[in-house]
Structures are given as C-alpha cells and as structure tokens.
Length: 165
Image (cartoon, rainbow, N blue to C red):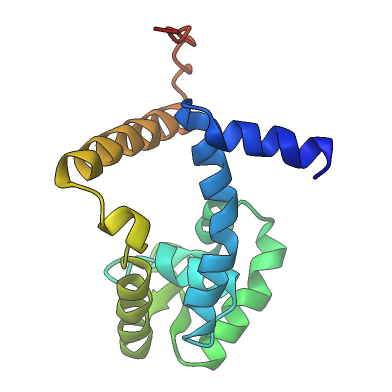
C-alpha cells in the first residue's frame, strides 16, 4: 500500500462524513455507467434524458447549461437521442430560431425505466434502520438545498468548525 492509498484508507475510516460522501459521489460513476448501459444509453445520454422534463420543452442551450458543457457539445448527444426516437427537436413557439427538445412517448417510457433503475438503493443503504436512513436523507437534502441556493446566487454559508467531542 502506498502513501496515497494509506491516506485514503484513513479518510474512509474517519468519523467525518464529508470525505466519505466525496468518495461515494466519485465512486458512483461506475454505477451510473451500468444503469445507463442496461438501457443502451451512454452516461451523458442518460443524464440528458433524466434532466429533460417530459412535460415541458427545453431549449438545447438550457440542457447544455444543465450538463455543464458547451452548447456545441450537446448536438451529438441530442442527435443520438433523436435518432432513437427518444426526443424530438422543434422550433420554440416564442422564437423559431431557438430549438427546443421534447421528450417523445418512447423517450418518456425509457426515462421511466431509467429513473426506476436509478432509484434502487444499494443493499448497504437499504438494510440500514429507518432512523439512520432518515438522518442520512436529511443531511443529504441539506447539502442539496445549500448547493441549489449557492447556484442561484446566494453566498455560501460560513464554515463552522466541527467539534471534536
């Protein structure tokens, strides 16, 4: 074991949940690849289909922003989803120069299957007592709400030192 592996092992054994959450988050890439692969989607196609609201057309530029990529990079993803009949490109009602994406009926069905596969919790979480799952959900929800607030322009809250007792 090298120094980097030993340091990482120490972080995983620590009581501080943040290094653990980072490790889980970064480790979810393989899981998402498998979820998407089972539906013959690339991870980016799966994320795009997940982000598109079946009840509301979305501008291609909005999808590019949501995927944190340049609008020119989204064209290939959209082309492949459209070729499979999962979405369609249409001119926006408010501006025919703007292309909006509409999830087709076939796309809605595949999206439902994608979300259903993604919502199956890993056994290590599903087997925890209800109170542990509730506390974990509350902590994760607080992080998500904080991130959404910062993304909307709010200042991040000050870092509070953690107690050692």
